[in-house]
Amino acid sequence: MKWLEKIPLPVLLPVAVFLALAPFTPEPHLWQKLKMLADGTLVKPLDIFDLFLHGTPLVLLVLKIAVSGRHA
Image 1 (cartoon, rainbow, N blue to C red):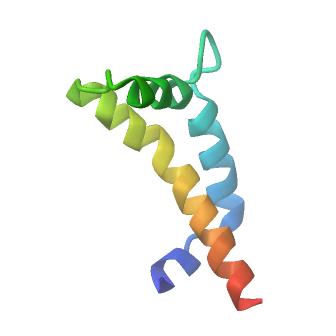
Image 2 (image 1 turned 180 degrees about the vertical axis):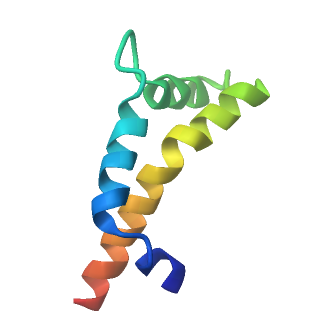
């Protein structure tokens, strides 16, 4: 996971938080898409793309923190 170590945390953190919470009203897309996934209604390609777009930076942030904690 050398590529993950190359992503600077000061860049990844705000991007992950912003995309996880955007749009702020009426409801963040990530939350909306996770509810759709749980309900079994996440079927449109655009909705699946939205889930990956808004969720990927957050997953990368969690992985980066987990990997850096393991090396400490």
